[in-house]
Image (cartoon, rainbow, N blue to C red):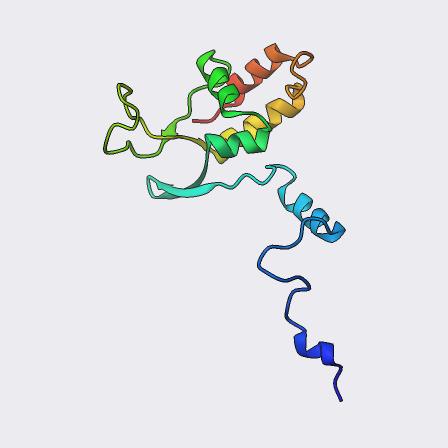
Amino acid sequence: MKDVLDLFGDLPDFPGKKQPKNRPEAQLQSSILNDRYNGAKGKDYIINGIRQTFYSIGEVCKALGKSPVTIRMWESKGWIPKPSFRTPTPQSEQIPGKVPKGRRLYSQDQLDTLLDGVERFGISEHYSGDWDGFRKYIKDNWKR
């Protein structure tokens, strides 16, 4: 006779759809999958017939470990260029008196450039990072 557990061979060893976070093998697997982007998920759009992956400002913030206010400040001060793409403009006014524009979208290359710059120039450490090197690196490597 077969072992009773063989009847359940293809079932996961946990209930539900999400794998538990407190098991060492689950933590290892999730860290391998998401170590570069910290769980940020892109969305595919077709631009000029080419499928490209873009990230919203929230997903960029998740990957960088920063807040949206920080990324918008970097953009307003000219430390990073404004994103080349936006979602379609909303049909109606979202905030009274403010012109609707659509959400910022950052390409895969732009996110990789930001991640590389933050890592290379120690921007995670607010006061000790090489901000001049970071700004120059972003300016030289930003792809539109």
